[in-house]
Every structure is written in structure tokens, then in C-alpha cells.
Length: 494
Image (cartoon, rainbow, N blue to C red; front, side, top):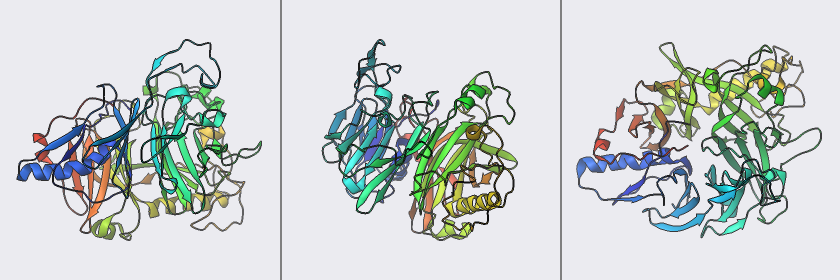
């Protein structure tokens, strides 16, 4: 997304941080570091160590922290880095540049291509730790989106699947358009749920799918769809009719996570008109909707696919353009105000105002929190309504027409995973979060949180490189001590 900035990876001496979730975008994770930096700068002299990309234009795109060892893995343009907790570079792995052309399909690494080849950067778009098998999944933009499995210890290539159609995930070269969730299985092969923008190549790439992650890295089934037959598959593709109706239609996957029995994705996508009139003009003319998508972890047929719009409101102003999200715990104080347990999951989100200009969003933005319990309750209500035969499936971009819900005497409990009727299911009733804070001038672009002494502390990074914090049950303030820190650098980041 335009307007986002990457952050120089910075650590100050003499302080450690509480352990937290491992899968973070770069600016979100730095929020944790910068809080303590701000505290130390106010109190005493502090020394800093920094890590920079090898070239100015080779931006850091993703960062993940190993939950047990504390090692940092950084996905950048043309590089994967392993870094110690004190930011000492331990090992790096080159991923580019390589000769490529986005029109080569299958990629030239599989068969010769007649298109002209040029040296092309490899933008890291996905970086996930597979804890059950001690390996790192790194996916880039080269060769139609090929992934690698790297050994965590030394970033040695375990396998680079590249010989099946399923191995190519997306040729989109922007970061922030793809998200993945690894679901481990005790003593069995794991599953990778992945959502990605397809850039008009809907015949090549599904917008969302689940894929096999065998324990054996050399297994021929690596990254195969969990299920793929003539009738049902563990994937969903954008129909050609939708692209004919809305020329710039795509689905951008901003965040994803697993909670309980489900996998969730947060997306932003253009709205499709209810009539058959084509939507011309530029992408800035479109209205966008932010949605939460839920699937059961073990649903290979995708019968459990449900999608509802999400956003938040303050003083009558709607914030509907999702910028970032983070799954965390509420802590005792915030949990009490939300009427949930301190061990329940909550979703911190950042939205920009309105539903237009997603690629150049307004600076007016809001920090909101959703409880997963409330999201699941709203999904359950939607399922119950449809199985009572009320209304339509409301998934116009996928179904292309109004499809009536089918009445069926099926009990819908909290773990219902769908049938071969009333699926896939959408909805139009907004799931509204609790608005914690709004910012009118310096757009918020990232968010993270952690719990300290029963209090949940959320941090947001802004377009200009500032950090703001919000304590659950307290007032929001800006970490003003950050003014003494160097300005954040220039590069775009997811």
C-alpha cells in the first residue's frame, strides 16, 4: 500500500522485552522495542545498534520472532536474514535478483520462455515459522511466486517446490497483498492456509486456498491443495465475470491468524455492483469493503467459508478501510470492560476513514478492538439466519447473482463447519469493533500489543514514523520521547 514506511531495525542496550506472538509485520514489532527505547531515552543515555538492508532500495518487508530462541528472521527484497536478539547478523540467504518475466508461465525455471528476461528483484511476501518441523517458509515475487523451505539454524534450502501449478502462488510484486497461516497437526502433516492478490490472473492463482505441508520436505505432495477434484476443492478463485464487471477487482489479504477451531483472514476488496452494469474508471473510483473471512481448520471442501464486513464508527464517522491488524490478549483490565476472559483472543485493528481510495487512504484513521467471541457470535447468527431460509448468500463477487438461502433443519452450534448447501456464505451487516482512538492527521499504519501487569498496551505506528500507545482502560498518548530518536527511513513495508 502506498504511504507505508519501513523501519530501521533498532535495539538499545541493557533491556529485554516480554515474549510475544511471533508473526509480525516489521513496524508492528518495532513498536514493542520503541516503547522501551522511549522510556530509556527519557531516563538516561542509551546506545543503539541498527541493522540496515544491503542496499537502500532493498526494503525490509516482514519480520518474525522465534517464540523459544528469540532469533529474528527478516524477509527483505532479495534477502532473508537471521539475526540475534541483539541485532547481530547471524546468516543471510540470497533470493534475488534473478532473470525473470512476469509473462512467463510456467516460469523459466520449469521450461524455456520466449519473453525477454531482465534482472528482477525478489520481494519477500510471506515469512512463516513452521515450528513443528523446525523450518522457515519464505515466499517471494519471482517466478510467479515460488516459495522456499529453509532450515531455521542456517537458512539452508530444504526444498524449493517449483514443478507443479500449485507451486506458484502469485506474481504480484507488492508486499502486503498476501498472508498465510500454518496450522500444525500433532504427529501428522501440517496445513498452509494462504490468501493472495492475483492481479487479474485468476486462472492461474486461487485467491484463497489450503495446501499440504508434509513433514518430509522432499515429499512430492509439498504445497499441493488439500483437496482438488472436479467437484470440490480446497480453494476459491475469482470468477472471470467479476473481473469483467469490475476491471480492477482483487482481494488484498492484510492479516491472518488461527484461533480455536478456525482460521481467519482480514481482507480489503472492491465492492461489486448488484446490477450487471460494468464498473469502469480507475481503482480510485471504487468503493472498498473490509471483511473477515472464517474457515474451519479441517475443512478441505471449504464449505465453512463465511465472510462478513468489518469496521468501526465514532461520532457517526465510519472507518472501513483496513490498514493493519494484530491478534492479542486483552489483559485483566480490558477484558473486564469487554465482558470477556483475560485469556480470550482480541483483534486490534487500524482503519482509515470511508470506503474509497484504498491505495491512497485518508489520514483520518481509527484504532479499534474486536473480540473473537463477538465475531464468532455474529457469524453464528448469519449461519442460523441463512439455514432458516432467510435472504440470499450475499457473495456477489463470487456467485455473480443472488442465490436464495436454503431452509434446512440443521443445528448450528459454535463449531459448525458447513454443508454442501448455503455455501460459500457472505453477509452485508457490519461487524462493528470498539473504537479506542482516532487520529486525523498522521495516518496509523500498523498495530501490535502485549499484556503487562494485567494491562493491555497497544502500540500503533504512523505514516510519518511516529509511535503512539494506548493502555487498556487508560488514556491514549504519544510516546513523545521518540522525538529524540532518528527519523525512520523511506522504504514501503507491509
